Image (cartoon, rainbow, N blue to C red):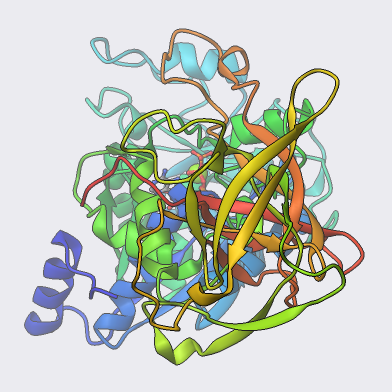
Length: 543
Ligand code: ATP
Ligand code: MG
């Protein structure tokens, strides 16, 4: 894998050289209100790889300061996804565990005359805030005395007030050109129990107050976040300064990752799950890390994709094909190449004795001898892909089987199609063929060339299997139309066929020769084999 290199690394190296930082500390701060998606992978890879490449370390910190949306099940799912990607946080922290310190620092600000309790409603607060072109107006509660503020804030904490009736606000500047600096809310009242703190607290700090303090407490040197926090940075710095934090962390923003035909916002992913449009957060069509895992995509491919997509201070939209490209690159030499038939057509080898079964040796991966060989079988009754047979050769480019033509069966013999059997509707149900025993693969037979090579599975040892194939969930990126109406009705296709007789354990990955890469589904068993197609072999993406 390529080593990470981007504008943030340059800043970090400079900070190490100047002595501003002695050891790089980063953190990944997910809110446990949904599953992680491929966009989060950019933040994860960036934080972990940058710190690792410079001898630093990375914390996982749950940004769990809003009990109304968060849940312990998301905490576990997020931990699991991060482990799966291969990252091991130096520490796992919870923002809510800092509530005592955060509360003390709020009191400190009140005492310094830099925070006040405000009784305006949420709507009034935003009306008073002004607009980009007009300054805001001071709240009528802005000049409460320190004593009154201390008393009211304490009463807020004791649960004397209804939700929405009081907030604690910073006293900064209602005329600031940066709206975030116009007396932002620091604390609000919430009575929903917290998944970790229970009912210990009924006041909760806002992200803009809690986050810089948590970074400072943990000694985070570089606090990386996506671009939308750009104009929150002055507030971040203000909080660290006025709270007189010993350690001063630095916020740096980077562009968000978007992928074509992929919706990534947690809100939308939640809607897909809750409306039953997908089978869950780990549906193989979902851009969640859980979905990509179930789809069979490897952590290595995700990391290579994230690194190759680069990082800058602008949001970027990347072709989804590019991830597929890295999946193929990763699996090309790792996966055993086996034969499977997803749309079976029966072939009977009429000159092969009934009941005889022959075992043949096949390389596991023609491009990687280290993967060794395996045993396959050949007998009178085989299946091939329907699309590998036509009655007549349509043109000279057709390199498969047709009546009167001879093809090689991968790792086995030449067979020649002589006749077909049809059902009452005229559909071809069986091909009668003959084989030539002199043509065994590897025997050095050179006398004539076949019309191509096709796959097959021998029914004497075949295992039945179900195959799932996927197309993008979303048809196009027309932002005007609600994404639910842009859902692709053909995004999930199920086929039934056969695979050769090998061992198939959940999460084993294979290349089905000439088709694509497949993973054995998590719910697959020997009695009911299920494969998910990870990617097809062909791609339109070129690196
Ligand atoms: P969403 O906007 O998808 O609902 P979020 O930003 O609210 O996600 P958080 O749990 O707050 O989700 O995200 C944790 C970290 O991941 C943040 O630092 C956030 O900036 C980053 N992140 C989330 N989505 C992306 C993305 N598409 N590209 C890059 N970074 C992202
Ligand atoms: Mg967020």
